[in-house]
Length: 352
Image (tube, rainbow, N blue to C red; front, side):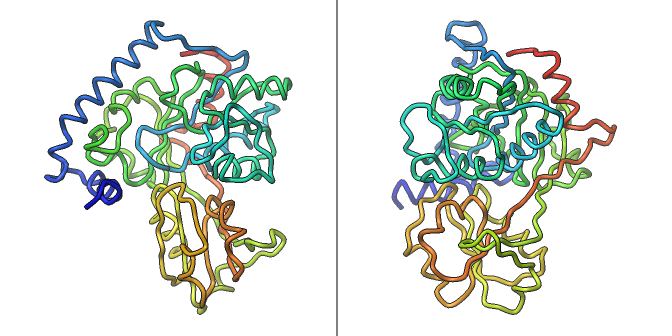
């Protein structure tokens, strides 16, 4: 098995509660990675490496695990809530998977191969300025220069981008949790779980509130934890955003579902909850599609996520439908809301 085959197999091994035997040879590399991560964080904490404070508060929505966990819908939810309260937010992102050089604005007609799939989705859905750049400080500065009225920045990912100081940190997990709780490459973690003690809140995507307290690694966590679910009922035509249909309009037809997100099974489960029967086709997160990748659906109807849609419109000529989703955040058992938790930090402006 080549390196690419090993890399594809790793997530299936990571997300087991116990360390898989096949991962034991990777433990020394995992320990080395943990040492490097700890030293790097310490260098920023004690100002041996410089970090920068933008003139507006920054909210970072990221994760400790590799791959997607539902950050983008949460970013859209938060931007909408902030706008309702009179804030003027902007969004920054690394633009993972894109080829953008330096910090630059993302437009609604941008090429996903340049801007990245998630930033393109964000600018089309949010209605606020979106800038991308490997250096989040430069991206934030460019956004504020172009849009001086912006008074809060939401960073899609960047929990480990310590050059950028932040007022709020939200860590997102999905139903897979922390897997075996090991750091890369023996596990899915970018940082140890104790890193969460510095976060403002933890958000669980696709985990019922009653199940949160049963996550063994998180029972003793002192930061607020919230449940999030993604709601989607109506499909939009891939080729005509003005055309919509419901799940019942698709039942009984030959359906193929594709998903190139962190955990494709989340999308497939959502379609099943809508009562649809389909043939699933998972792809890696941020997959760069070619027409040949989609040949399986030549005799039927294709269903896909919004994230896939921004990359596939030019590749698909047959009937295809996109399922937009919206995040819903559930209050904590004690009545605490995520939005109030964030606003409390914003008003305090405690930068880290």
